[in-house]
Length: 419
Image 1 (cartoon, rainbow, N blue to C red):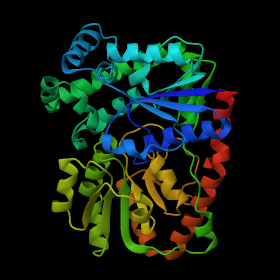
Image 2 (image 1 turned 135 degrees about the vertical axis):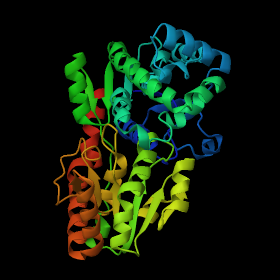
Image 3 (image 1 turned 30 degrees about the vertical axis):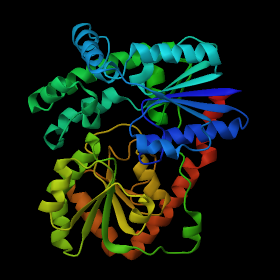
Image 4 (image 1 turned 45 degrees about the vertical axis):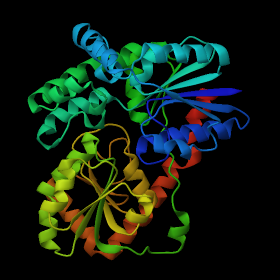
């Protein structure tokens, strides 16, 4: 294989969130499998400051330009609202000029393999001899549908994606009753579109093997694979014995303008944290992640013991000495990278059914999976107060990740797709 092309809706670096880490993993797996290949990234640029941090595995980086305001407005009104053909996710990313740029690039350079990152760039599909892969990440339609059950905790149902909307539509979309309608509308469009585009691609990728299996049954696509996040456990730390941690420190990690993260933080601080703080007045709760929304920043002012860090240079340093990581996710889909990373560092995790989706880890041994607020409070306090239990869960979580999510375990399906 001589040339591999990645078309991404944002820069796949640096590793500041789960999706970027996932894309970097794809890139490094491919470079490892085919060391002599050239990897070219055609990407929309989410933040120009990241351009200088391009990893060495990416041979060339070609910026893509989003549609202008008028074209976005046309796409939304015509293709989404009138024709009901494109989800908003697609409409606000599609530019005819950029599509011509991609078609010309593929025609001239003839890549052997083209990976499209998420359904929002699926309309940029271009003819060529190379195999075409669509990475869904997870089923956005299901994630959006689940949001409707927890609407009161969501500051903005569209999260950072709302910034892509034309100004007049963004102001309209900030109204709560409009948001609820929009998320139901977008979920229906996405559910149809996710299945409609599947046959256009040679291979489909999900982060969760369970979601890949279910989608394969639904669409009867012959090549639908789950490639979970590669997480390398901290075996050296385990070899050194019991880890040092602050028994009063609880953390939550995530990009904080994404609805499933911001809503989890708001919910936890409103319903669960006061009970933990009452039982342990020394407890401190760190909310770690870039782009905290005003609602998340307000938690630091209104809730005793809550610290909102914003973006940090080294997530592991902030999380690694915590008594536990909490993941009280109200909705979401796929395997949650934040949970795997914490487990790989030996940090015990307390989550719920949504957070543990896609994992076959054992409750009470590898992590805690709670069905109620009472259970969550009880298990958080248990891990803060019982060092023997904390050490046991810590060691078990490292061993679990080593068995299921090491590099060798996650590389197999990528080799199958490339072979």
